[in-house]
Image (cartoon, rainbow, N blue to C red):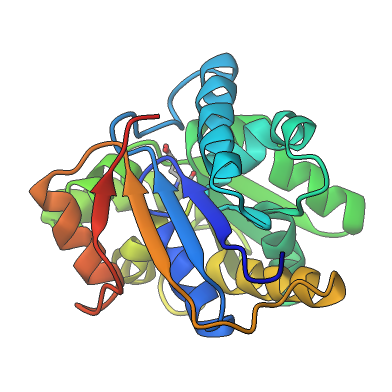
Length: 265
Ligand code: DGL
């Protein structure tokens, strides 16, 4: 059981930002990544469709005999976590939201957090609910940024248009007291530079990679599931195009530890 792989999935390639950190924190673990690049983005779709797609991804990974699942996507975590848990039995399922909320709450000094994400994530109000449940004194301001995912998937991370869109989306935070902004979408770490430039250095950006990788390590350690074998990795996607390979190289700083393989779900 310990040497079985961990399944990590996302609607596209954004979840590789989480996988990258998991490889750093847990270098002995074999990983299977699955990105539904043929159908990304999920965040603009309705709940039933997101649940349907999320369960297809989950079932594919369960067939590969994984020992744990990481939902490296805020949209799927926000909308489909309970549906996914209905089919995963005893396998631990780690989502990106809960570890990131705790991480951000421990860092705010002003007690005002911001969160940006896809429309589905923001409309679910999962972040607001989790923050309020843990500490009523913390205020959370949210903003959906639906164009950010296609801009990342198109590799438009340094374009003028992206800067203008960021200014438009983030202007609502200007007169707020936020000192910490949760990048509530696993694609957004690729826009860190433009978001930082727009908000200025008084706002600390938190992405889900580190808290999620740490949570995974904690869970595997507690359940005695850590691997002791040389790892192997697989990277499955449902479509491949040249822009995507450029983005993957960017995420891994030109050291992508494998190759993208196209599969049918
Ligand atoms: N990486 C996904 C997330 O974290 C992208 C969402 C989408 O597919 O729209 O929400």
